[in-house]
Image 1 (cartoon, rainbow, N blue to C red):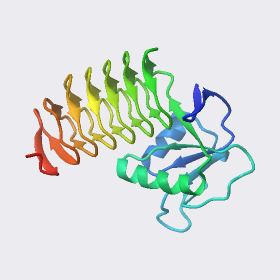
Image 2 (spheres, rainbow, N blue to C red):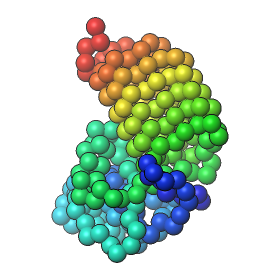
Image 3 (cartoon, rainbow, N blue to C red):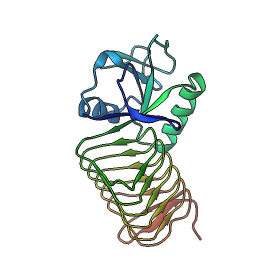
Image 4 (cartoon, rainbow, N blue to C red):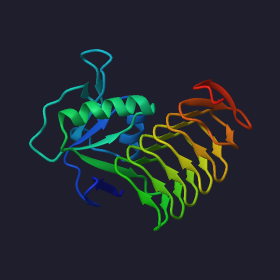
Length: 223
């Protein structure tokens, strides 16, 4: 298993001495089991459902005692807005944390592609030539990022999301299962693309779209 430790200043492989998982929902279950993470190194940063909530025997809380060893983090929240909120809270408390990229060994990233930090990729994802993946991006299994496409910070891609070539995606966009963006399209920040949707036109920021081809279903009025 290849585990990447990465910040905006450094890139390299290293040992995980402690790991804060931002979010304690179903995505965190996937990340622990996919990467066979040792339970005793884990901390879960989230709003607990009850004061006694635990995950894998570890407490879920919004504050924690920093251990006397190197501490790293990875965000696993599906909702881009909630992810940003939790990360802002965590980094306000502990601004010197190191970000971790967890990239499953079955993923393919071409040499000319660029990957940011705090990036999580599930199995069989492919990132093609000259594509750029921003920071705090979560990608489920079998996603495809086409050549020369740009995925903004805080985006979430559900399984089998297909981004064709020369697509530009703003910050905080959510893609539903099996959604597809045709070549050259632009997706504004904060937009939501429904499951199975085919994006054949540019999408305005903070708007919601679904269907084949897409139709506006909510959020900001694009007209």
